[in-house]
Image (cartoon, rainbow, N blue to C red; front, top):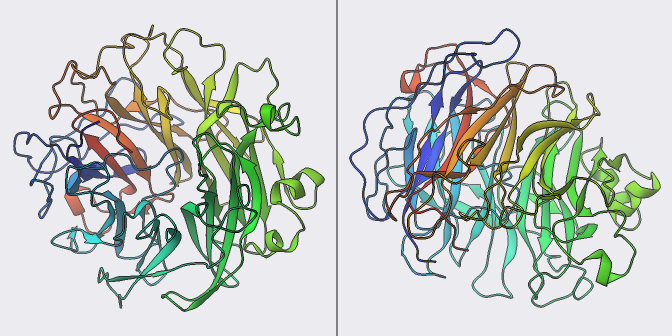
Length: 543
């Protein structure tokens, strides 16, 4: 698939808790000039955060400076903070690509490319937003990686400095998972140095030795507790497509700064079929969790021909440590095995059987809320869907320690009839994030089509569906979820390449904040969530 530029934006919204979101990608064909800013008001419902009759109102976007990639702009809502020819951000779980930590800066990043060549100059770009002066910090986004870096995650330290992660390497054998530390003092500088573990080879292929099977796709959590810990979860880069791969956990103890911490050896978590494990760390205690999916129990231990025969039938597993991951390192064998034996807290929370109508697929998001409960949301394909192309029908479910019931967040069960094309490693409700703001839970996701018009909004030549960002909210810890609201509302049916408005690969900061300076026209005192997303001008993806 040919490359095209995409817009990166930051969106401001006013709901029960407001949203402020960056959008990342721009188009190879330049749209009309962008206008001012993007905020939308919505009335509070009696229990949840959305009004009944009043729909969100979006004002025009605010174009950023130094966008690059052909100086592309976009009409999508939000502050345009960059442009890239690389729309694809993660295979499955999004992790988090926008984060603050109660400091004066919001940090965000994306997988970046400025040429239009498959396999070209891919890297990771970051930008920061000054919440006091209400402006982006850098004239141009800062490049964190070279050497075909990508698949980034973003966290923030207590000093207000960014902590991005990615994998990169000059060739296939030098790629490794890395965290990056800025040389900032009190404010972002944008000059990063990498820090990484040395025990980097996965276990399925060569039992912890290389070459060719490095642990990649890092997701991180920066945790300040009894100690300062950087948690990292990775997946083995298997040599063959469709091969099983191991998940490994790392624990770095030490202060902010490259070379200021000590990395553990890897700890094997499980052997799986998907690149999607995530982490969740408490902001108030030493609690940390690993969440992943693994082949359904009725396939496990049946021999490789059965156990690893596809990517579509999975259960959701988690493991919990209350001592910042030290107990993860202490158990013998894999963490999945330890959970199964009851040696550490955790469980298989789904235990799907062969007749289950849904089974976990690709996307997971998790967080530990302010009351110290683990919350997990995940995507499932509808197993009984035999009509839509590649089983696009699906649903998002929620489970938490305080509401230990599997509850539907949203279902996308319309019949497309195979007349339009969905995204690989996706469904009609995909790439979710979960956040907490003002004592409510929010789930953000991208939706393709709807029950009334399942195949209306797609590109003219490739027939690929354009996505819309949707948000739903729960006021009772995830027991019930309000009707989702369309945040971007930008249909472009039968659009030509370069003129589409497909909103995908969004990532929402995990914790809300309070607006203190009236940035982007948002009233002081408003509760804010921050979202980074890709406005794809030619729907589809190119890995």
